[in-house]
Amino acid sequence: MKKILSYFSVIVFVLLLSNCGDKKPDDESADKKDRNMFGHHIPRGVTKSSDSLMPGYAMFSPANSPFTYLVNRNGEVVHEWKGNYAAFNAYLMDDGSILQGANDPDYPVFGFGGPYGRIQKITWEGKILWNFEYADTTQIIHHDFAVMPNGNILAIAYETSTYEYALDLGRKPELIPRSGPWMEKIIEIEPKGFSGGKIVWEWRVEDHLIQDYDENKPNYGNPQEHPELFNFNLGDSIPARITQDSLDILKAMGRGGRNLTLDNPHSDIYHFNAINYNAELDLIAFSSPELSEVYIIDHSVSTEEAAGHQGGKSGKGGDLLFRWGNPENYMQGDSTDRKLYYQHDIRWNEKGKPGAGNLTLYNNDVPMGPDSLNYSAIYEINPVLKEDGTYEMMSNNRFAPEEPVWSYVAKDTISFYGSFISGAHRMENGNTFINEGPKGRLFEVTPDREVVWEYLVPYRGNIHKPNGDPTDMMPMTYSTFRATFIPADHPALEGKDLKPLDPQPEPFVMPPPSEEDKKE
Image (cartoon, rainbow, N blue to C red; front, side, top):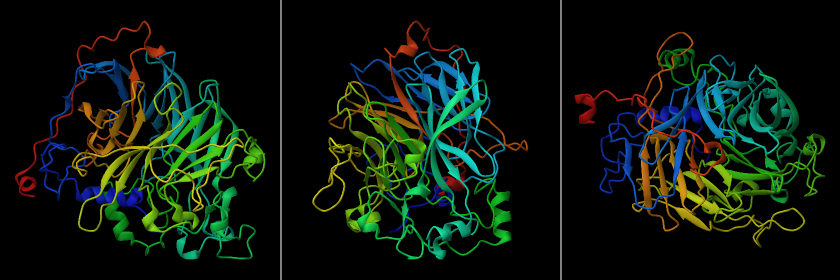
């Protein structure tokens, strides 16, 4: 299986795209060599609106900023929450508070995009009620979390391992990063006091591996016969070690992550980037862009059962109940059967919304062939849950469905494109709210795929590095990891003053492109 770009290689890739043109993103005559994925030097704010829009607001955290903003349909900020770290993603609670990922400025070991190490709860008035850190030399929360009805939090976390440990689990030597791979786990956190949290449940990927490389290991078997397990020998060979000079140059440029070493590139072998919880079914959905698949596991199991293959409502313990996007991973197809390409933001359509029970996701980097450009798409899929708690498989031994029940691509295909971050979710009126992350473009499309509202984030924060140096604005100048549509009748907004702030936050204006940039 050809591995899609890791976050490390994405950073290198986006540097090549940082001198972007000034065409509007929806210009169907745009130069195919430069789609301006980061939206440099284009108009920002509300660029499209329509009559009869559903009343509501967009919530997002600008790049390099401690703020989370609530923006009305006219593009005016009506409320802001301020933390004391760069905000990563936020979820609105019924009492008007938010829970948000916060980028701890001094977390060790990990890096390359995604780790942040803290979750904070901030009231409507801006008081920090909870400031939980989960970041040390062996583990860190990253990318995403899900808030449960009981107030607990399901979070994705990396765990360090060693080269020898991965070898003992049956991974081929040529696939093992020199410092060892970062394994993944899902933890359930019960908040305690101002900064505490009790881990009351956990699931680890290492408990659900299979490999056909070393028959002397206990997890030896045929991955084709066990779609409920992760094949531990997927991925590309680890490239040659970079030199110390190259590492010094990357660090001097501020590239590659502050914890980059000679031995830890490509340690992020799974890169889980999204998690969602279905309380009615007591199931967890999550996403691995490195494997280009989305998954569902059973949360009704105990931690002990989650480490095994029996127990819970499904009777399957912590094994995968559902997987979709890349059947080649469990040897039930080839590259032509693949559906997902470095996807982000898996979410169930909530009860009461059109398509309730289906899953939506942002399919980032869909190829069209060697002579054309990749594009992005939004997929809605309908996994078929059976009465016994397992999911339906088709006659070809792949998980249903064969195709999405709904999808969105741009009319010209290529003008909607964000190769990383980004997300989408279903709205109450049946439309779909989309965050084209690299560009900071938030927009709403109808079931007939018409764009009825579009807003390009005009803000960027000014958080500096721990040593006082400014954070480079290029290329991710206006990027947004996650954005959410908040309907006007959300309980959090009841009785709140939602007049536009006066003054409004100051938009970030990029310096004009140089003559050399214009020539390129």
